Length: 370
Image (cartoon, rainbow, N blue to C red; front, side, top):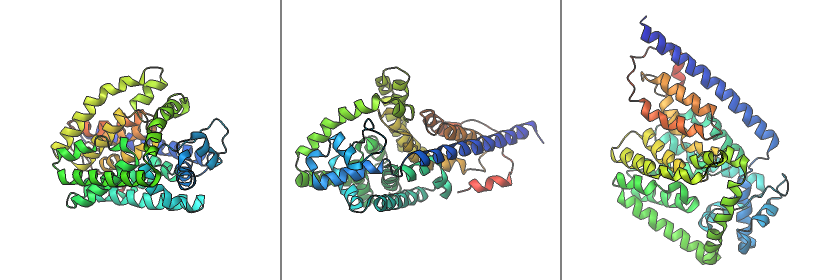
């Protein structure tokens, strides 16, 4: 056996071992979280906001009021605000009419199904559902399932521009900062009709919210954003588990605004990736990775948006670079709750340009096939 092939096998075995260990550690962390935190700890904010919108909409962005509605059990200093735009209420209210745990179960099931449909649609393997960050969202009930389902689904539906536009527009109405680079991506692909439908969808939904709750509620939301930013940037625990360079710099004692120097990098990454019609995993990595690079606030559960791309690379068991993909994935899993995970994920597309010898067959790797 040639020395190069021995090295290839050694790296493959090392990658498998590191990934297995990282997964074990991540699952242990999740078990601890389940024991110390109520289910749907983040869904509760959506639930409380929707309840408030139905009864006392003028208090929608009163952080203390929404914390009281949740009856949050972790103490008076743990403020749990509703901070999403008024347009998002149309999605949250149908789940809030149910008792808390029933609504949570329906929320996770419906949004999780949308996410899995979209990820499978773009060719990601089914076992992306086993990723620790995916299971974290099942536990806390956060937004990445619905955001990933809508945006990834819109990317996949090139032959249905109207439906793709509606999905993209709805995503913008839910969490606008996470579609910040999407217009650039769709423009690079020449999908003008999809962008027009997305814009129209956003206008209709936002106008409807202003008609129902009054235009003043949008000014209330804008006024709440600086207060929420102050709440986050002074919470060391949140910063330590953030997913962005801004969070990492701030937690390290630096000015997080230095991260905005990465804006040209993110823009170039998205434009060239989509304009050159690269493979879908690279497009997902560029779009969501670029957004995380320039976002001031994003938590570790947002790695769910990168998980389909990471899993797609790991599924390339016949690629001679598989050991390198495995090592990068091991890094992603090792730091899955902290900012460095982003950088390991973004390294995956770059690894394709490293020359390596032809692979050998390891039967056990067939599990990773998509």
